[in-house]
Length: 129
Image (cartoon, rainbow, N blue to C red; front, side, top):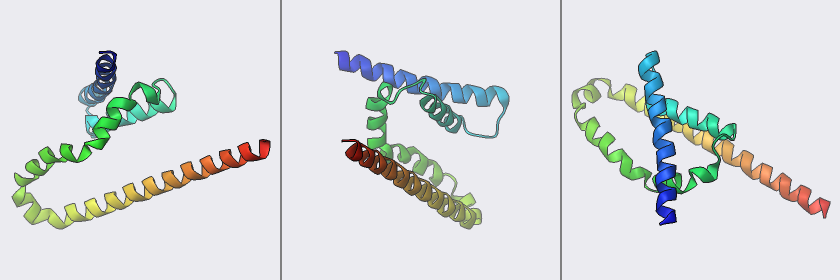
């Protein structure tokens, strides 16, 4: 029962941050999706250690594990845009390729930085002993 309340609380934290991002976009008329702003808010909150990873880890892990499932509504939505894809499909493809490349590059560089940091910490620990 305690685990269920933990999941509900973690989900509530993520939903509140998501809704905060949507609300800020709505009020300020920013040209950015509310969910993206919510992710940026979450990043800042994690970076400032206002929210700790263990406060959202259980639900975030579940959501990431099932991420592919969340692309089904997007795929169905794309089916309704068939005429746009016919006329501007190459632009969409170019945007997708560039954004995928940026995402892969960012993920790779971040992973390399984390590995180097862990190796330095392990080397420091080995030399200290």
